[in-house]
Image (cartoon, rainbow over all chains, first blue to last red; front, side, top):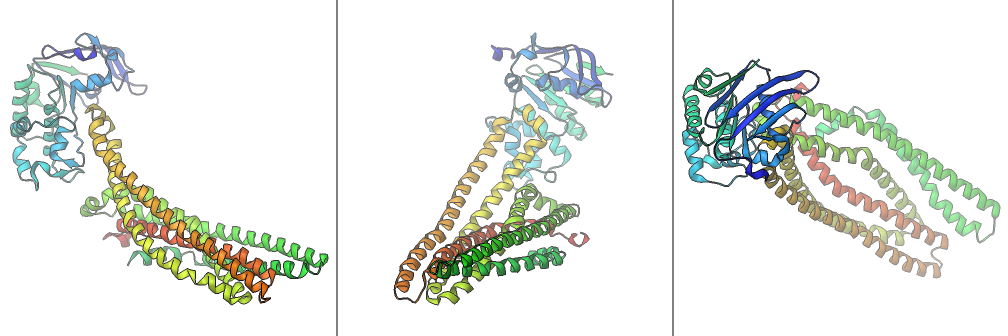
Length: 218
Length: 320
């Protein structure tokens, strides 16, 4: 039953009266928010205002919050964590790079679709970078010294986009990207927003200006 | 400076404690030297002449020997443990100091080894330094003392024991080569496995969010399976290694009993001497087996020492 929760179109996430604290101090105070597919949903706010925390709640790892989080009208506390994770892809502020090839770092345990992978690499401007690597896409990376901050961020974006999951969440996705790469990312997001629920946490003016829905956490 | 010099420099600081422990070891050995002679006198004099007073004196002497020997061993092991643990702490401090002097290239090359060195290699060194080395030193002294005594009693029977030692040493050298090769392979596998664990611990939240269990296990399990296979191979090798001296020892005991019985019949060896040979040929082989096994473990320790030293050896090592 759980598997039918996520749809091809019209996915939505609703946060109703959300209060949350890691320790004693409240991080989120009475948050009400509705995120919908077909829009670029952007959450912005000061550092430490709880933007990332709010989005992390939908992973199902933290469940000690007050209020309700509904995905397509179903409370996420009733959804198995494995189902949530099969349908929600996260792009973190800092992408962990595993000691593995570039290819495996992107696809992880997903099935390999060479055409789609190459398409994404080109769209995100990572293809040329890979061609310059010693063994191309099979080059082993890992640690901090193999790829630059911008490449690391592109890797994270491609990793998230490659999953084709229903809900795509990007946390500060353009903080290390140059203007050209930022534009490439925004173009890509605009092209997929009809088929995926896209949520972006960002301070970037470019992203804020391109948003269809903006929510500011104070 | 190679790692032998480096470890020698660490140990040299505790020369007074070493001197005390070696003195205790020799004291213990001297006391033990009296043991077989006392047993021989009980069997050859006290029992045939039914001299109860003499028997009582010898039994009290035996008890005193046992107590003094135990006190010497405990004190020796205590002092040795102090030295070994202090040396280990020095090594750990040196390791930590060296890490702070790493260049970018050092970090790139050595990062993979660090966890295994701090957990496994230091532990292997700890095991051997704190317990095994002291036991082996006691064993070596015991073997020497016993062999000197036995050769005074009967050179022919002593020769039967001594003649097996080259066979043991030759076999050990063969085993050591295989053990060293397999140990090195195993430690390298541990390095990779530990890196995977480190990655998981550092990125546990991200791994969960990526639904990355399968991805992690696909990388982790083959290495762990490889480690298990290599450990089984190594344990089998250690079993062969342990079995060989004990089989040889059983064979020698049969030879000594058979040959010794003929000598008793010919009146060239007393019953007391044969008893001493029977008891002590066992007591010579058990420590010899332990020494032989120790040399196998020493191969593991040498690899751990090399690995520890490879992390310490940096351009900044003199800043320690």
